[in-house]
Length: 408
Ligand code: SAH
Image (tube, rainbow, N blue to C red):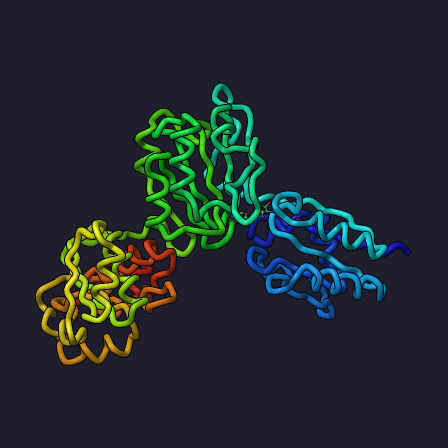
């Protein structure tokens, strides 16, 4: 029997978006090498219990080939599972060539590319009759340079819908270039779709003039597609499109993020101070940031000129929280929950008058409303912060999950 490795497109994310043929290949596989960063491990549940599954994320090309060769040569059925469709930025050519050198053939099972997951999330045709009839799938140059003639500005001038892979970290440069050299108007519709079809999918819509800031505020720098073109225009009113916000799967997009009032942010470590500044700049509320004096200069310097809120260097950050207790509507602690709990414990009275208290770790993007969840607005504010960080708000209070008023 001829030795064959089957390259399978896993689809964009959701595990039921693999093709029937791809699914059968997984079910029959003895060994699966999968691209862990963007392939849902839930897909591996389709494999038999004896199947050996290995994430290729940390492996060199040589190690991947060695894995596939050894199993294939031992008569095992090997599947190489790629995200989306293997033919787009899948680096499959080099694998197929090296396998061939070892006498191993390859066959390819196509998959649903993330571009189609993104179009579905946007709920639009990428080819819109009367507006544009072509789609360009491209990328910004990265470690892989772009051939000169495949200049994004040149593609822009064709009026086609443009879809940029692997480019979300360079949105500002991209948008500027499409306007400056590509001649696209600042109000050209643009969208960023993060992790299309995954549970934490997010869609940010805007225009070329606004999209990079909007994506930045949403904390999206990777695992996203950038789409640009008039085909994305919704209905009859462009301003309606621009006004629309974004939704994501972790939170019901109807769940309120309303919060009015003064906030104080408290940061302790250098990472926390950076994070506090990011949150403060995106909250669109009156904010004061308290941080240790030793981090103040570095952070101030970094945010120079961009900072339109107050930053106060202090010696004892927890003490500032206590002193401020009744002066603001929300206290947001960037650090350990223990620090927050110990600082506020002696001050807590009851839910009708306590201010909102929210904790957010320095690194992970989980936001925990500790106090005054429903009544003080901590749950709603936590959601807003979670959106800014691209994370989740843990809002476990019963009144928050059911549409009923909080009990006093
Ligand atoms: N073969 C894949 C693309 C692999 S390149 C496909 O057909 O979709 C990896 C890039 O694809 C990411 O940097 C991102 O730009 C995009 N991407 C992959 N999956 C995505 C998803 N679910 N949502 C948004 N973008 C995705």
